[in-house]
Image (cartoon, rainbow, N blue to C red; front, side, top):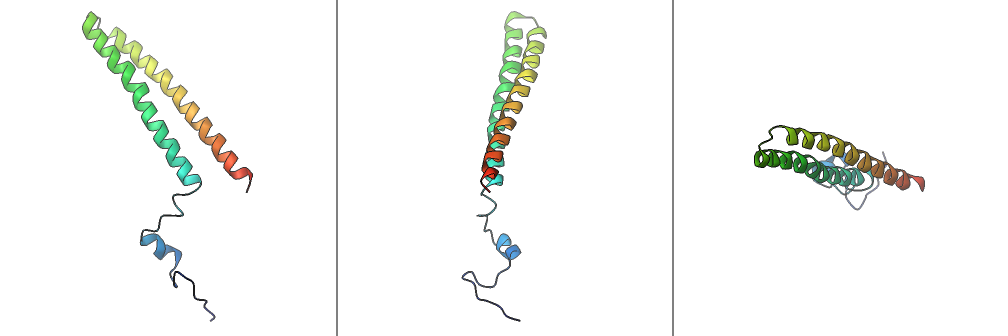
Length: 102
């Protein structure tokens, strides 16, 4: 059997993965997906918490429990839809642009 010597030695791909070499995992579609998930996460926190917590606090102030909280919940659901749609559309656009040239 004819084996050629490589600069990294005769180490299989699975052994390199076990050793912590993540350079291939952090490039291309994986990196794009992780950035999209992080973008979605912080936007969802803001879009959900602000209307619900704000509605709850306004209900306590005006003594109208639970009406403004319910309105805040409905606004949070609508905002969540908008954020998810925008992030996924952006992700799809970027992933399609990344594969056009290949």
